[in-house]
Structures are given as C-alpha cells and as structure tokens.
Length: 468
Image (cartoon, rainbow, N blue to C red):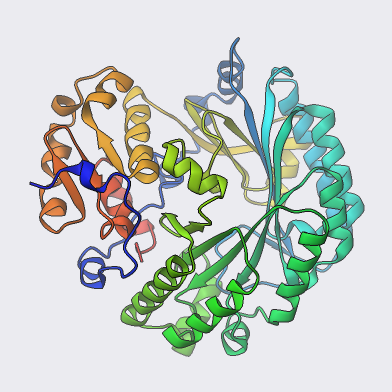
C-alpha cells in the first residue's frame, strides 16, 4: 500500500487524469462550510442568534473577519449564481449603506470592541456599483464600529466594465490593498452569450489602475463550462489573463443550477452549453497552462504564485477555508453584513434574509436580519475539522486528529476510513495505517474525498453542482 507521506508535499501533476475525473464526477458540496448551507434551518429558536454572539464574545475570543455583501449590478450576467439586485438607480447605494450602518450598530453592541478585525472583504454583486464617496463612507463606518488590526487585510471584488479610477482610489483610501477582478472569459462570442461584454482592454485598464494605486495582490476570476466555450477559446482566455500577471487566479467550474437560478435556463433553450467532455478538456488546459506558468495549485479552483500568502500557507499547513474560499486567516470568526450574507462562529452559522424587503423590515424593528442558520453539534464540529483538513491540507493524520478531537479517530471513524479503499485503489489517495494523503492525481477530486466524512449528504446530494 502507498504511504501517504509520499504525497504530502508534492504539487499537483500538470496533466489531470481525466478518466479518473470522469469516473468520480458527481454532485458535491464546495465545502466552504460544514455542514453545507443546504442544511441551514429557518427554526431560529434552535439556533438562538443572541446566544451565538454572546458565546462568540467571551473573554479570550479570537480575531474577526468581516464580509459585506453589496448586491447591486446594473445588468444580470446569465451564468451568475450570486444573490444580486439588478438596478441602474445608483441612489440605491446610499440607502443600502444606511442599512449596513444599522446592522453594524446592532452587531457592534454585541461584540467585544477589543477584538481585532484582521480581514475585511467587499463582495457582491458589484461593490463598485457604489460611488466612490459611498465606498469611503462604508470604510468610515467599519472603523467607527470595529477595531481594525494595523495589518488588516482589506479587499474588494471589482467589475472592470464600469470601474472608474475614483473607485480604486476610494478603496485605497479606506485601506484596501487586495482586489479580485471578475473576468470569466475574454472571448467576445462567449461574453455575448452570457450577457457580459467586457473587452480585454478594460481588464488591462483595471490592472494598470490597481498597480498604480498600490494594490499588491490581485486575483482574476475565470469560469470554464460557459456557453460557446471550447478548449481553444479558453486557452486563449488564459493567454490574455497571463498578460495581466495576477498574483492569484480562481478558475471556477460553471455551476449549472437552473432550479436555483432560472436565468440559466436560457443556455439550455439555446443549446449552447459545452458537453461534459468539452468541459473536462477546458479544466485540463487551465490546469496545465497555469502550472506551466509557475502558479501553484492551492486546491479546487485556486492558483497562486509560489511567493503568495496562499501558497506559503499551503506549504506551512495553515491554509483556511470559509465562504469566500481559501484564506490565510484561520481562527477568526466571520461576521457577514448585508443581503444573504453568512456569519460563522465556532458553534453557529447565521444567514441574513435574501430579499431587501425582509432584510430592511428586520432592521427597522431593531432586529438582526437573520433568516436561517444552524447550531453545530459536537459531532458537526468534529467533522468540520476533518473536512477542512482534507480541503486545506489534503491529508489526515489519525493520531494528530485523535488529540485534536479528543476521540480515538480510527475507532470512531472506522466506517469512513474503510470507505476509502476504492479511492486508494484508483490512486486518488495514498492510504496508510495512520492516515492518508490526497495524491497529485486526486487533487481535483478533493470534494469527493471530503464527502466520505460528510454525514449530511443523503438528503441533500442532488442540491449541489457537479465536481467538475
């Protein structure tokens, strides 16, 4: 039997095993949380929102990470699975900042002000739908209600199509040094098919502005599996993006979930979606091209330069994963603000209302705008740690986990360990007596490995997008 130590520090292979991926292609959670968000409940009495914040702010509580969901977009991208509000009325931005100010005040009075905020992320939607003065106002409100660490990491998602230099300058003024550019694809036909026309010149302009204003880390988002994409066109997209020299790339598999996002049905009606084989070919070319260009495969769909914090955290075993994806800020509670945002503490998940009416009604009544959530059992917390070790470290050490979880891991999770035999036989993991490690060939199937320790899947398996 192969020793897991053989694979512990190896990077992923440059050529993914497509036969292996075909065999294990199935719906699976993305494991930005465990249990997955499909398990959240609207029975808030059981969740006990007030107790969640009280417990999280006991003496000795760790740092905070803040997420602000800014949902507005001028037009709808038909592939999008985010919770968005489509409007061209930019006055909505100021009204929404008023809402966020109310929500921040409600949470701040439940929060120990001595806790340092180590990370702030503005997501969406389109954060730069907000005019520059409203971005500055948001930054001021954050500093008014919370205590930012001197080295707090502040980042924002940007849409190059409607980005102005003033947006970037405002973000820099509030302390942002990281940004994520939504590119998705640079082919004009693909862009028109997804209702997102975005010439490469706009991406180049956005990157030039970011560099000139002192942003030292820029991520580029790409999506494969979109309508009219081919291996050849996506390879050209990667060529275009590499000229931008981003520090990180997120190369997402298009999640076709028309039962959640009806706008995606247009792709089925037009017969424009690539076949599973074509989508696999795009995944392969992206992996091959980016690793050949020197980027490290961090996990799932994230790539980073070897000297980037994510790559260093992966090597050091300190990588973390939350609702924003991979992160270097382990140990921080995540407090989410705004429409549909999710908060995460050691014991609880809380998700805000998904409609503006419900969100604002709760705030007007002086209530936290929580719609649903989940209080984790002791077993949930154990399995979350196990799954996050798989997703971040790509290995499990049974003896170390026994100490970490306070149980005899091999005995308590004997059934799950026994279920790994087929993954070992197919070379997805190297399995030993005291643990296992995901092989380079198995790296694209991290979610499949994690599923073996997921006790929630039976009722929810069909609610997730495909692995690739």
